Image 1 (cartoon, rainbow, N blue to C red):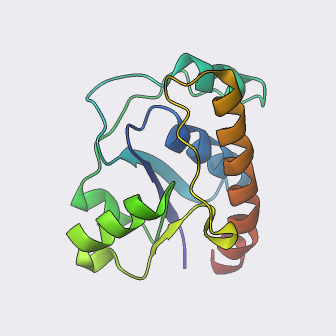
Image 2 (image 1 turned 120 degrees about the horizontal axis):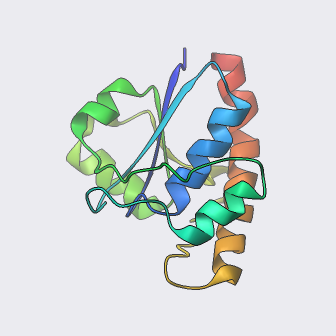
Length: 145
């Protein structure tokens, strides 16, 4: 049963907050959180990410960055990363998480582009990739929830 999903990226500033917001909206009975493998402490979401989410009627303006911990990984039944490198790093550092860590765009064999400090084109590209990944995972999570 999946009732807790953790979404992970590097800084927890752009990609994982956007993905978490989309998943939380689509799966209201599932707890969705996000964290970053190298997240700075107490930063907000990137303004470009906030604006893109606002266009989808989602508010991530109150998001505060969260560094990834073992506790986050223990609590989640499904961990979705943005890249294969993040997936492999988590599996190497936290062997107990093996079997529940996947890339968000695993089905497309794709790493979600990191838009941080790269302009609106890359934010829109990352969000399109995230939306595609979310659309793939929704029926799986719904079946297992």
